[in-house]
Image (tube, rainbow, N blue to C red):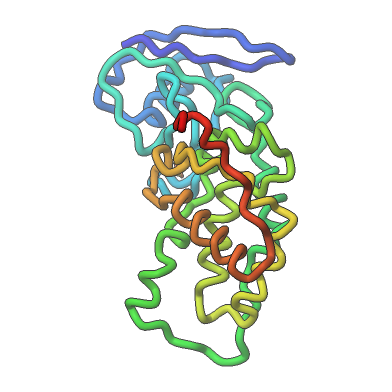
Length: 231
Ligand code: FES
């Protein structure tokens, strides 16, 4: 099969094509094969090879995917993800994801005693805890292009777990920390939900958080333009 890769070297992108016997393998296995057999300089990021560490996101035939969890059966094109600045070949600088988590103070304020959770309580936040911070929701998000202060789908996905988990000592109070992150800039296009490889449904979690913040009087919902309905 043919594997076309958009590489980034010395400040510019160039396409390179490799012929490899890789049908039925994951994209990550193919990249490793190319590195071992054809091009030892090829650079990409991966750690766990099991869909857990979230470091291997790339574009496969134009779609954002986890390289280790995507099996391919015919010719493919591979590119670095959108939005994040490319460092080398398929490696991008995703530090902005962690910066936004810090800005929103998305962490537990731990209670002095251990509070056991019932299984139905854990169920409420499990989608948030399933998030592996691979960043794919951010790379497909149009709100990021429109509002540089927007806190990112990944930040709100993680924040949901922190805020609605009863083991967090500060609970709802932490909603205030999210105010500067302009959650109301989300357009609810659901690109994040459709692309999330872990099925975390970021748009739903953003919707719940946003409505809760409106209810607490912390933000006002953005006016939506429904002019297209033509009444
Ligand atoms: S290598 Fe860890 S998620 Fe793909």
